[in-house]
Image (cartoon, one colour):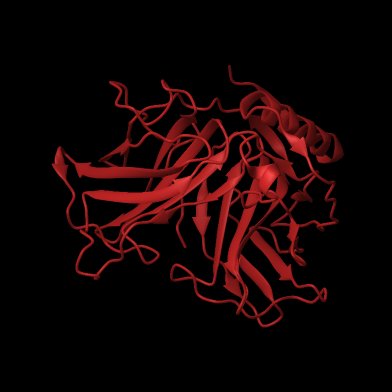
Length: 329
C-alpha cells in the first residue's frame, strides 16, 4: 500500500537510517555490522537537499563478511577515498572525490567510455538514473540534478582513480517534500519500455557466478542492430533491496570484436553476494536513444528468479519504477 509522508531534516535522516537497517534484516537475511563509518558529507544539492554518510558497513550472509569484501556502494569512504557532496546552485548536483591526503582527486581513468558514472536511485528502488557529470579544474563533478522527486536517494560514484583500482562509493541524499512510497514490483521475466520488450533469462544463486541474458525485441521482431553504449551493447546495474549494495555487472563480448552480435541477446556475468530481492536496470541504445528496462529478481527463491512468467513488468512514469523520462547523460 502506498503511503504519503512528509520529508524534513533530521527526523527523516533517522527514519532513513533505521528503516534501511530494518529492510536489510528483513529482505537479505541476517547482516553483520563490521564497523561504524560515519562521515560529515556536507549539504546542498540543488536547493534544500541533505546528505548523510553511511551508518555502518553491512555485510551479507554469503561470503562477504568472511572474505572481508563488500559489494560496491555501501561505503562513503574506502581505502582513503571519500565521496563528498558539496554546495551547488538550485537544480544542480555536485560532489568531489577526496584522496588519502584529503585533497580533491582530479585524475581519473576512462572506464566504459566515461571517467565518472553517477547512478542514483531512491531507497525504495524507484527513480533510477544513470548520468555522467563533468569535472571542473578544482576536482568538483557537476551535473543537472538527477534527484527529481522527494525521498531518500542513494548516490553512487563509480570511477577509477588514475592508476588505481575501480571503486564505487555511495552516500544517502535527502530531497524534502511529500513522499509516496513505491512497492517493489513482483518478479517477472519480461519488461516493456518505450515500445520495446526485454526478456530476462538466467538462474542466479547466491555466492555463485551467474550469467544473465537479456533479449530485446520491438513489435515482436528481434532487435539485431543495437548500438554500442558505454563500450558494450548494454549496461546492467543491480541493486540489493535494503542496503542498496551496488553490483558491478560485466557484459560479455565487445562491439567490433568480430564475435559479439549486436543483438537481440546481451549477456552479463555477475555474482549475487546473498539471497534476497534485487532490482536490475538494463540500459541499451537503439536508433540513437538509450532506454532502461527494469526487473525484480529474488535470488535464492526458485519462484522469484528470472524464470519465464506470463506477466509483464511494464515500467511507466506513473509508478515511479519506469524508464520513460530517465536521463542518460
